[in-house]
Length: 154
Image (cartoon, rainbow, N blue to C red):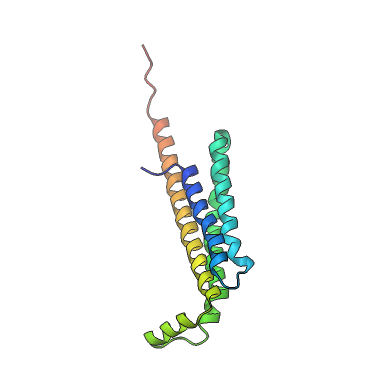
């Protein structure tokens, strides 16, 4: 059994909403980029709430929400690759000791940003995969319902 899509959307949105401000508080020098997970979370949360309040528009709202999954996942990975990794990997570490030194010397902002981008990529990626699974199941259920003949009532 799978979760209803509006509930899954709200849970994923809530995780991202909590991640944004938490990162903003934990970093020594917070940047606006740390609020991006919060913004994606607000969009997902709004889609989940709207689809519960307007069942007649649920299909359209969920299709809009599913687009946020790959955009958030790819955007977080791209941002992680562009901003966080190159600054911390100027020279590739050769030993575990060098990796530990590199991690401990990284600024708290870089650490927090790397963690939030990773969380955003994971949450948005899993949300997208679960949406695809749900859409496939819904289509299969619809096809099965159409294939079974309706029994006349006596």
